[in-house]
Image 1 (spheres, rainbow, N blue to C red):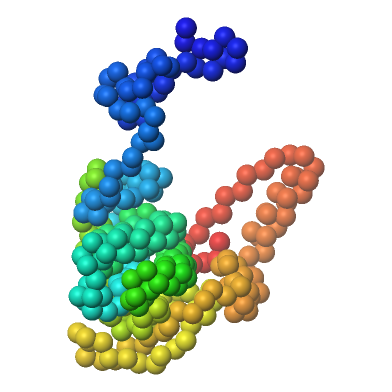
Image 2 (cartoon, rainbow, N blue to C red):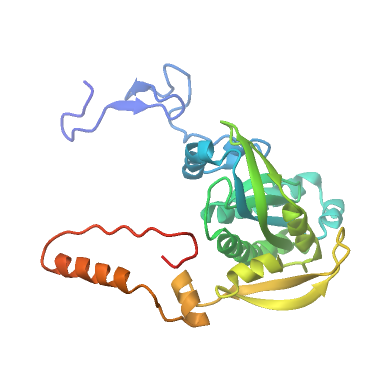
Length: 309
């Protein structure tokens, strides 16, 4: 028999490891020997292999769009995050304790970065470098990076308290953000990505992170200009960063504002009157009247970028 004669349930035991259908009274898989009473253990994460830690939904998006992305010049946002005073923490604790603490930290980083469809480009031992807007394209990449950074610091408060209680050390992260152009090179089946960050896109993000206070988020002027309606910032004025002759504007990212959409952001700045499109407006009104009378309509709006479609 393959099904229960009373309830119709399958009398097979599907092996969680190899998907082989076993008779219901088997304790171990007849094909691979796996203990059928145990849940499948997830393989350990390999931080050197992006496919190991990238969620399936995000990996599919990257692989589906890579043909259109490879060789393209894109604007994107770089997020750098690392543990403040990591060297002192490593000297005080046992290596296994440090490893366990960082595993928990990396899980928080991965969860929040992937939630906003950012991709982790590399693990740096005591932190990560993440990209928003490439290889998965988003017009609001700067906003997504800001939301992810705020969520990370929020989660790190509770995690830091737990680490302090268990290990007696102060655990906080610093985060830096910057936007700029990037050229995406090849994207492998294992999600490894070669890219060239033009100018100092990545370098400035790293400098923002190294200048941030523990537990804070430091953003460049590029980030501020793109997201100032969506987030509350504190201007720190001009600061001197390594590798730059001239001081640069820096802003501490505080919290989100109540503005959530571009229309709301435009309204906050003040909307301008829509003029000079009389014919187009009449065409839309005419189509709308036909719709109200029960006749379906399709309207296409074509125009150069920035004209106000």
